[in-house]
Length: 216
Image (cartoon, rainbow, N blue to C red; front, side, top):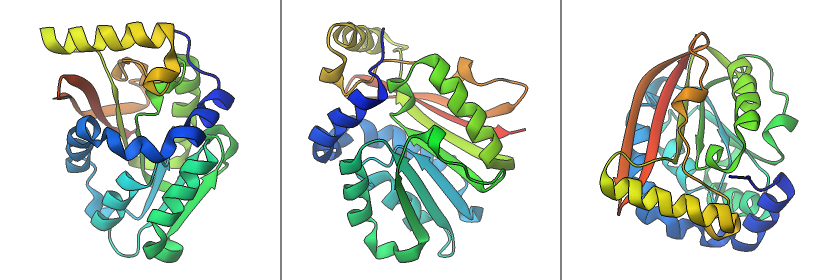
């Protein structure tokens, strides 16, 4: 399955990003599961790759200590605009950058949490591994990585849905937002990450993988 290139992804979400909140019917249950495993009460600096509309960021910021900061990057200028508007009430605690993940250069160990939801399933495995290398540098030792993506089903219904989704992606990836079913866990180098939680959450038949790992 060939992923969309970054320019095509940015253009797609510039056109349709405002509709993204409508995916909450299948995205919200796995995102709530992820929230349960991020240990946000003692987090001080969070990085999100793929700001989206800022809806998940709002959940994070409401759960974080009042002094914690949030930084996000997104390829889509429209998504950045939507996220900034939604998160305006948090003031100087937030930074939303219109950029690719590989274009930012935070200091090593700048964050203690990094999250990304429904972004890795857009990229090729080579890009994902390069991004994970960056995340490993940006997280402090013991910092936590939280990921959610579409994945292959583990039940007959989940397998049927994910197979159909993959078939649509092969034909016209923009019809499914560029996303395809992905297994994230095998992409994490076990010498650099310790997986502390993995589960597949199926919402209305659509399976998503929730993955939490601690930086070694």
